[in-house]
Length: 266
Image 1: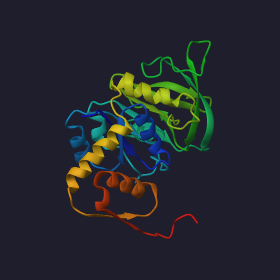
Image 2: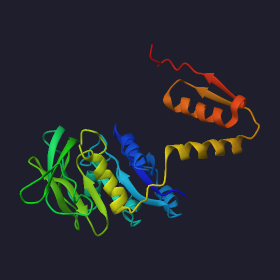
Image 3: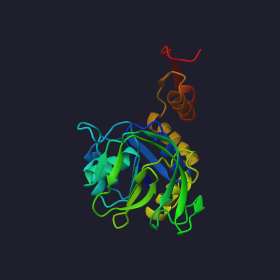
């Protein structure tokens, strides 16, 4: 069985980019809603294949009462955790830190200066500062900000307008950044994610999209057998991929029905 990374989605527009970066690194990842439940996460981790959890960004504010929170089991499994943007804020609030609503929303290019060495970010630098620390060219998109890290965490990066741009608890292998390493605007974002996968989670790249396709086609062929299948096809990416994979698996026994949902491009 392949090693896996679980991504909890808090509603960011670029959550799927996180999954893509992980998969491009040769690691299987799966995106699930943040409220998937304790039992699901416990069962997902039961066979030992789950090696780390990533918390995505999102549009909400942890300073408001009824907004998404991280299932507590995430911090109890003993697995490495990476929080991104809202994921960092939710992590900080739940573990005893302090988050405040930012007076000015920050969106766009920023430069993060690392403040201490960590196994995660050591050697990651767009420029090396006179004090030996790194400067990272990143992309910010946030309103709230972490004012004080939780107990046991240290600040590992800051900007001129953000005292806590990155934080870490090396002992528990829990890390977080306010910026978005998954977008291409963060110059060394791929390296930052890969360091989490390989340095922190100890993963070995053992997964490819080709192997996934081969496995799914075989599974569908075995499950369907010689039965006939109807597939509703809207022309979107999801249903089209399903149709293509089904056709590879069962050929002429697949019958696609096009559904005009009224939202197609002209």
